[in-house]
Length: 74
Image (cartoon, rainbow, N blue to C red):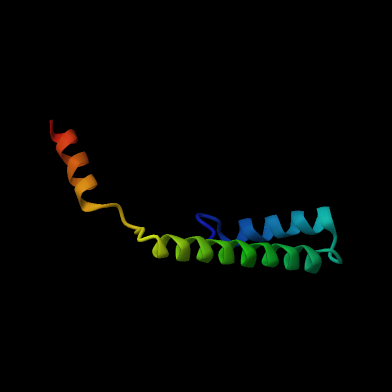
């Protein structure tokens, strides 16, 4: 989830954030961040639903993939 960040790196980042924003504002910042993530996920689901209604697919068409493979071989 956090890439290559280890426990110590995350603790250092948390410490720096606490120094910058203060312990009192952290819950407010966390709540705003969570709300933003929820809104983003909701928008993403709406777009996926619209694509499915239009007959779109998440996966590329097989014929397109075959054409790309033929171009690479040539």
